[in-house]
Length: 421
Image 1 (cartoon, rainbow, N blue to C red):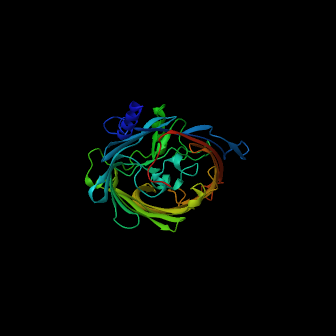
Image 2: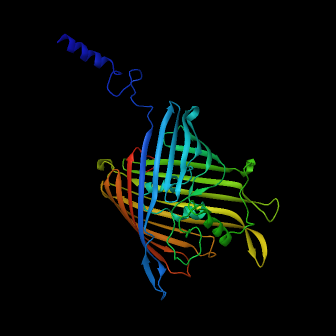
Image 3: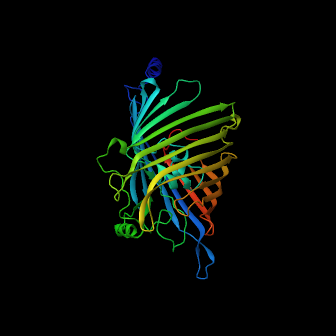
């Protein structure tokens, strides 16, 4: 009896001597990395194709592994963390994100460096499978080339105020977009960002064909100008780098309502160098603002709620254009909007709608419109099925394209993307 009492007291007073904990720290497996895997599968039906009589018919691109992400991350020490995200697709594998974060600098400062989704706007910071809809906002691809995913460093400052206010500055190698999402088009359409050749995908304006490199050369010969302006070289001048600034904040409007808002700008003075006019450079600037409203009644335990918002994006960029055999410089300014609304009925069902308007490089001043609705069934906290229907109006000279997308998404292990809601 006395032996049992002594053993109980020893266990109670020695928290390090517990199954699953190291005897020295008492913090358990804190050095083990967080490991997670996300899988996203999509299939679609669309009426972009026509039969021999010229009538629209419904076809499919089949099944597409939209996302397969392996995530690894852990605290290095009490001061910093490293996160890694590899993305796998049918075309190959790539580093989606790999960065360090030092989150305990003096003066409420945080430093992040590596390759990652930059702190720009709202939807550009979301991984595709973490969005509430099945397809990416096309406005991102049109003005940035996809989600803004550069390599560089960011320094953030959390203002010592009673409400959340954060200011971020960034320096990157270039303005670089990342996207694997494409639109359905007719098989007779010309190759381009909306219609990559089979087995290929676009990163921004660059085509990658891992299994068939010959297609890259064929594509370049058909659609690219061999004397087009080129990106800065390996040894960059300071003005060749891209600079970012963002201010973001939140307001609490009672227990149930809150608002997130922010403004961003990224600028690269020498985004491209001319091959026709020695010494001539071309700048690129993307700017925008976003507002999102949330209704999350605490008595519903966050299973019922509403969020809706709008994001504005603008793009100012210089190009070389040819008219009548004469090449000249042209600066084009475009802008657009993306809006969404989502209602969470309960822990199982969500529904919502989205719409966007933006100006493409082609078709002059005629804007593109895209809008649709989605319905999500959460099988559990870790997997869901989503149905999305959308309509895409390319330009006044072509018929609109209708599309249905069925998406399955599942996650195993640890998988998070920071402050997103």
